[in-house]
Amino acid sequence: MRDIVLATNNQGKLDEARKILLPRGYNVLSLKDVGVINFNPEEIGETFLDNAVLKAKLLLQLIPNSCVFADDSGLEVEALEDRPGVRSARYCEGTDTDRCEKILEEMQGKENRKAAFVCSVAFYCKQVSFALSARCEGEIGTEMKGENGFGYDPIFVRNGKCFGEMTQQEKNKCSHRAGAMLQMANYLDDIVKKGLFLGSFERDVRQ
Ligand code: ITT
Image (cartoon, rainbow, N blue to C red):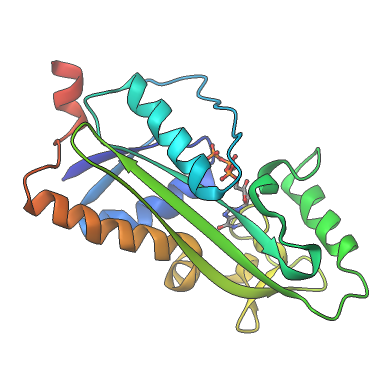
């Protein structure tokens, strides 16, 4: 099993990444697993890709002998000029529910309800780095639905079903994160074949 450390404080992202990458032979370690505490980079990038790169690079500085990756993601709503976008996590003060309610309020009376989730991923280790993005198209519902997932899942509808009502397995069949993680796994397989993958986190702590 190959260890990769995810630079996130978001448990929802961690759970989804694990479900997608474990069957591909990649063991996703959390910041806590590798003893990194107080990891709070300022996300000053203008794009999801910029922020993913920023988070991954910062984590690599802290654990330079490991393979690390970061996910920067969010919701783009067409009628709101692609807001909340890179500011998805901090669109307004409060909880995920408060942020969903704010979007629903802003969408009142709007006919165009098209939206997309975007996920950018950046992978870094000593020898190699890459970054990529994936999108999942859908629309904003008229009310919050379901108890599953996290963030804006209760208001994001894909093919008639809300992400908040989907099981993780269902969401992982079509989500932006699944798209990005599966592309990443393909790149990683290539890196392994070329002998450039660094190995496990254990090696990192022992050296
Ligand atoms: P890290 O930076 O620590 O990874 P974060 O939650 O701050 O965690 P981002 O800066 O990438 O992450 O912001 C992403 C926000 O976009 C997240 O907090 C959710 O509100 C939303 N989001 C991203 N992916 C989502 C998904 O699959 N379902 C619902 N909301 C999602």
